Image (cartoon, rainbow, N blue to C red; front, side, top):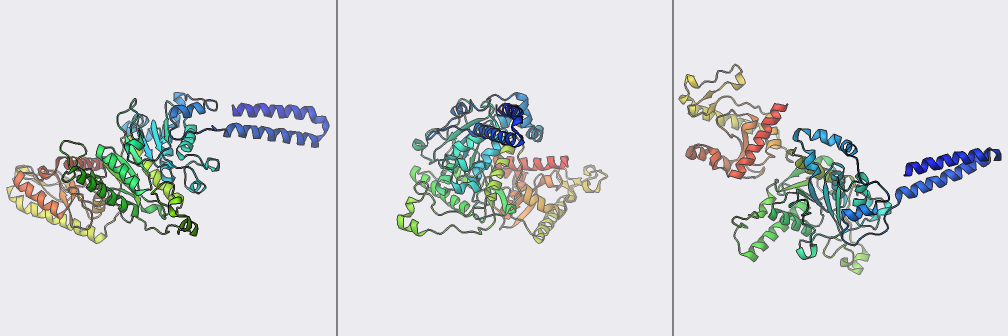
Length: 526
């Protein structure tokens, strides 16, 4: 419509200039300038026209699309939508992930500097249904970090502003359902209403919840709610007062170091858990036969709650309380009751980086192509060398103990010296270690994230690499990082149960073997 209008007015300008040619070159120039300016202003009015009314609480996708019916055609031809998502489809081709992404349902809570970038990229990447929750409005100070807001959006609800901009990316309401909710999440069912309920006509459970809240009690309430119901959460910690993109990491909540927000959230979750146990009289937070068994374990389990955080120390402090705030009372300056009053210094790049990190992890999980984040802490060369030597000594002791049981029939006749070994009558492999000291960092950081695979304890305790399956060589896809306590139990179970793996909890064993399988798959690819 805009293009046709421009062409029509352009032709009119040419015709008028031709008719007025006799008036002289100067008059023709003035006439053309006036007509061209009028056409440009009209085109600008058409392009920037927006609905004048906004709802107070919830603006669903149907009403959002009704508001735009006079501006944009609603139905996208399949070939256009396919081309829009073609690069993503290529990336997820090996896992056939695009159909899963397009049929997924994601809840994003918090639409400031972090959450707006996450929701923006999810919409661009083909996620089929996005509910966006935020009670706040766009302010002038928001414009240095918000993903899409402009000056004309100041004073409007963030959820509505984001929904309008995202609708311009994909005008087809069947291919992208936008569900903005202008409301604050509180954790109180009566106050929240159906905010946390997935769209029942489409799904029974959220595929993913993105937590981009910057308030500690609200953030902890949301994580606890999801942990009790087994809903996967990807949560972002503090982005204020930091700027170094090389310090951004993904881990479990306990491993998030040098982040004051993460520390406060852990403390609040423990408080909520203890309060719940006191009220219910239950021991250890466990309910037999219920999926909410020990929900506080989400602090250590990144398969339940994954955390995006920066290990950089905060380099800029909160703004000082002004004389006006002191005089009128701090409670009069918060966006909501009991929320932070002091202003956070924020470099706009950091919320964007962390928001895009949330989106990347969400898309890869939804598309069946998850990645394994590298551990934040890097061990020194001496530690890696000691770990390698300890593994070699451990394997040598096993060989000395079992070598007498090997016969000529059990010998491996492989011509490759790296894979040449021997087998005991019970199938235990005896042979050289198939890694070197340089491989230790990959195994520790990328495969096991510097944590004991059995107990989850991190660095700070004595660690060892242990061969998981004794019928196979000590290769990267058969080595597990364990703390000293776990190693002792693992070896005892070999003696008593015939296989140390049998003493590992079933769910934990499944996860360990899943990671080892991924390592083997990577070795085949490269």
